[in-house]
Image 1 (cartoon, one colour):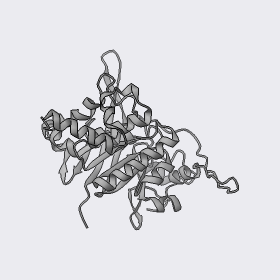
Image 2 (cartoon, one colour; image 1 turned 45 degrees about the vertical axis):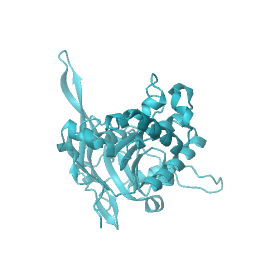
Image 3 (cartoon, one colour; image 1 turned 90 degrees about the vertical axis):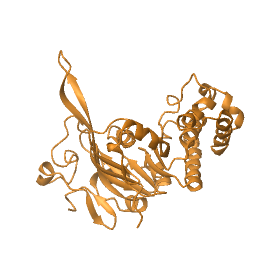
Length: 322
């Protein structure tokens, strides 16, 4: 059994809440609260959950684009949380991110050639000619033309901009790419093109993805395994077929029941959750989901469930099973 390329252990990210005349800390938002998972080389791990559950914060914390509050992130056995900023900078060529908004993630003042070639320059490609050749090659890889290098971002559609973002992420031949909802801002027809492109690139360059999304159909299409997050915590993690056919956690079941079915003759029991999502600045004690769970027991209100195996490689954090 090979070692996982990425090991996330007890990752936490808390943001201070400032208040009062002197701006003192009066509380904290627990955006990511004790997150643990592994990703194997060449795998696509999907992470899903409703808006505000901490998916994007987790992705940025893994890459230390925002500093984690606690926990460890090991990439190829190296703990990223122990590295200096310079050591981290050297390692970044192996870890990249594709951002959610292709309109905001590209500098509108720079031409495409500069946007894509900047990571090459930062990581040591001094020759201008080599950079131009690499930019041309990358544009063709993601389905654009070489002449697009001389244009500005505003001259492209959303799908084309996301292709430019993917080209930038691929520039230094990374091993791991965090995909932060890369298709959520795109039309459905364009989404499928980008997803197919990302699968082709995974096979061609032996990439590993952590694919963050809130659209279950997108995650089912592209992922090998899927983790479900709720209020900063992972509540279920298994391969995609098991998750969609036999969801264990009550929250996952509610999510699955909300996925529309194309056949109007098929009826599915719809699980409607009561109440609102609790605030991450004041999460419930015990299981974070107990305030909305139809199966909540007394222990759920007091004791936080362990995230552990209930079947073969099927991890669930729920007192119904452990």
